[in-house]
Figure 1 (cartoon, rainbow, N blue to C red):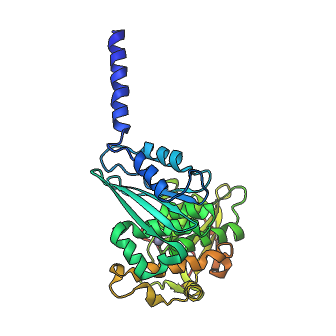
Figure 2 (cartoon, rainbow, N blue to C red; figure 1 turned 180 degrees about the horizontal axis):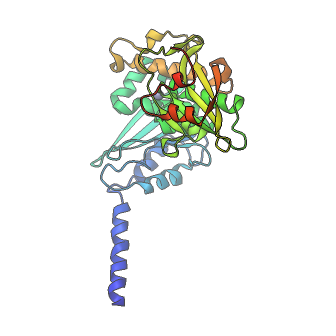
Figure 3 (cartoon, rainbow, N blue to C red; figure 1 turned 120 degrees about the vertical axis):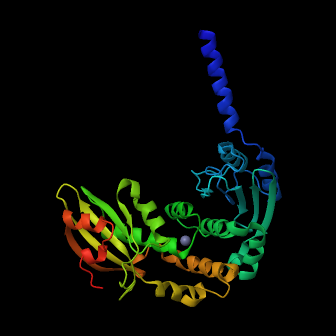
Length: 344
Ligand SMILES: [Zn+2]
């Protein structure tokens, strides 16, 4: 009986090992990429970006790919130069290695059948040029905006907590930047002291909400993030910008809180980036590289102001609320702005 149990245990171990082994050994491709970039392991100018923790294009898991990247490049989460992004489970495995001093970049793509290598350069802000961006799109297709913007976000020296927002959002854009600024504004002007917690009403939702949730640790599962479209007939634009949402500072013991109605000034973003709102919808839509490069430019224009959220965010008003009002704000079919008394 004991022998049978042992045999069973051995079989179980073997089965599990088989599951975790990817069908392709990605190691030589990473070695070759580092060599092609003419850089040594552990060089701080090297940046690695991958979706390896999330995808299994051949049905196998890829944790060893992350280990291989760390071992062969010296990039790590601790150093802040190993970044991740998400993709659906059956998507190709992507590993981008980039030199931040000269912009040389190699992307390894494994789709479950074979490996392809792509090379391009993003030095001197060439990613913001539609012609150059279009050339990279021919190689990376739908992954271009994710890879190029995440690489540039790090290369431009954005803070680590900002990079975590971009990782979660799967790209770097002016929208995620607006959410980071909102989170910083809230932390600065409405700190969650003892006994207080945040509850965010993302209304209307846009890219920002992935940053608000990342920085302030708010998720639907924890019951502190509610996403609602604007009610019909309610204006999205306020006197000092677009309505961005309502942050409630809730005191659970006292069963009362403060609702802070926020606005984000997009015109200030356009002004700093030297673009117009029409530039965001160029002819041809997403088939026109300018659709993406205007977003790249606008993102970069905000970098010097990441610690100045007041430049873009205004409190429209603050309202004291009780448990009954909070319950109504959360309910389906109610307009949270109406509950806190903001006129249509
Ligand atoms: Zn976005």
